[in-house]
Image 1 (cartoon, rainbow, N blue to C red):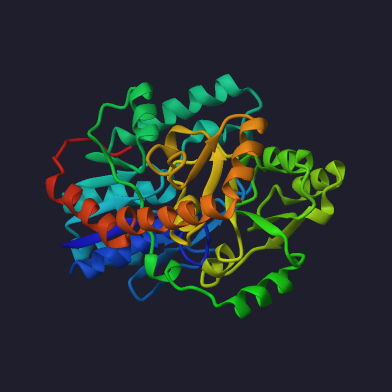
Image 2: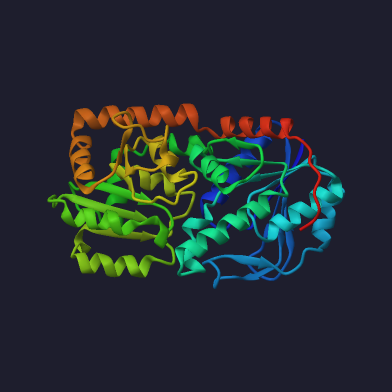
Length: 386
């Protein structure tokens, strides 16, 4: 098949959507499909780089940090993609490139499949101070966009249930996002681990709680910081790997809580090195309730890290209590389970289970095969251009 994937976010941007697309592309190519990417450039210039087409865009930071808007929907590179005659369009974002995906699908008369990555009601604080109004806008926007698709792919049952609540009247497929497990199956020797720990500033002998991801308000990292301040353990370090618009707020909160000696911010880390950082952690932690696919959770498990994360429907069948970690509900629960997890006999079992589960269920090849099955069974619809 000739498959066109459209997305507002792509390399060199680093986020869960990009990681998902990169892994899907690799898996589909290994299955013998021809894949091209249509995305936005980080400036006003359109260009092509191999199988990736970048369309000129302008910043939309006032709407959402890092967001961009296309300068045009008529472009010689888009015309080339139409002449390429793809068999299916798989859109991954709801803004500029969705309009391009819809136009291309109509020009070529092919289905458009859409992956719904983002629960917008969790992000309405960027555009509206009124949560009720923000949610209503998110629901209307989501229904409007998905009406023009042939079917929808979501990473978890949580998201499918939400779309059903929104009144989305489309066939919805749950396909857990896969990761490139080869990267997370490489073990650092003890010397290299100690070298990396020393480089980032982890005190010798400390156990490490690690968070990996974007630093944004909706990630609720303040809760983990508050819990850390209440734990009576001087040999514990929280390693925060990543960067984002909320970092300054979190840095101030660290100082307010008086835990500067217990928290390390690494800043942005290259995707080619991120697997190394998981290996110097002991327990993966998160308090986010805004996740749809939780790729970092799966990466952590694949690295052999048990997870201790806030209870959330998206983590059903991902973090299994007492098997590969726990989903906590209160500070007392968090503290109790952390103490239990760090005991050697418990830890070894949780770590082993975490790695085995991730390797079995979340490979990029399994991910691609499930998506391929959706492509082959998509039903046609009729619609008019938005």
